[in-house]
Every structure is written in C-alpha cells, then in structure tokens.
Image (cartoon, rainbow, N blue to C red; front, side):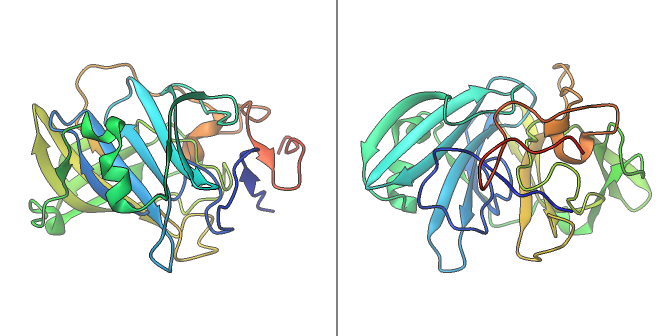
Length: 249
C-alpha cells in the first residue's frame, strides 16, 4: 500500500504535489558554472507549485522555494539530509506570488547567473538511460548508453522522493538534454510514472553532472529506489498527511 507523505507546515499545495524533492517536472536552467540546477513543479493549470535548487553533484545545499498567504519563502538544507522543511533554515522571505518572473527575480536565483535550458538536446535523442543493477533494491546508478556503448554512469545526487520511498517506477529514465556548463557535462534525465505509475502525470526530473571525485550519495531510505530492506524506520521529518509518523514497512 502506498503511503503518501507530506511535510508539516506547508500550505496551499495541491494534492498532486506530495513533497519537495519529489515530482519536479520541469527544468528552467542551471548556474553558469554548472553546479546548481533550478527545477519547478508546474501544475496542470500552469501555476508553479514550488521550486527547487539542486546541486548537480553530491555536494553543497538543496533549496526549496514555496509560497503561501502572499509570501515566498526560501529554505535550505545540506544535500546529505532528507529535510524536515518545517525546521529547515529559512534564508529569505519576500512578498509576492510564485510566478516564473518572480522566481527569477529572487536573489538566490540571481546569484546562480542562470543559463536557461537550451533548445537543442545536445544529441540526447539517441541516448537511453536505465537504473543498474536491474533489481529492485540496490545501490543504483543511472547508466546512459549510446546503443551498446556506455557514455556516462551517474549517481543521483538528490533523492528524497516524498510520495513513497519504495514504489516509484524505478527502472526507466529518458535523457532529455546533454549540455556543458562551466567545467561540467550535465545530463537532464526524467523518470515517468513516479508512484508505481499510479499517476502518469507524476514525473521526477534531475540534472546530473558526470562524477568528479566527490563522495557517493548515502544509502538510506530517503533515496527513493536506492532505499532497501536493510534500512529500518523512516527518515526524520516525513509525516503522514493526516499526522503522525508512517509505520515501518
């Protein structure tokens, strides 16, 4: 049974958007040096539900940008934590609604010197990508191939899938774009049918740089399909919609 999780303290968020670091479905661009990517969840009516800033490697900080009651809040947490956003560090509060124009005007975005998502796909159309090894619970990597040739093996630097830690459509990705920013080669990859394919509109997009010698992401329950049966309990911060802590699976 799928356990939908939510963060306590969020307001005005549609049911289809379960949690930050989950089903972000659009990439707006990345920082000029390629270290950070800006993602948003766009609702069916065109409104932005929330925005996320992810590191493209396993380093630094994750940011989430939400809006409620006429105010935009920017919070951050270290990349190696599944966050309890209710207690995360708030680094900015500004009045306004979360439109794309307002988002791009925020100081945290301006400091990125944002490079917008290029129109050309950088040859991505000929590439395929899947989790390997091909079993349900493992330390997965997104392996990108051109035909039979491996062109990149990518650890996913930002996990924390909030809707359910085990049931996403875990195996297949598609490569949307390959680009260079600063000294990094970036792959924009997308997993469709998140939440066991229960809602085909739910997707998870990540911008991942080819590895550069940084530490590997931690093996923990909050890593979505990287979570496994060796791990017990739920990461601090996850809560059921109706309150309380989910039971151990």
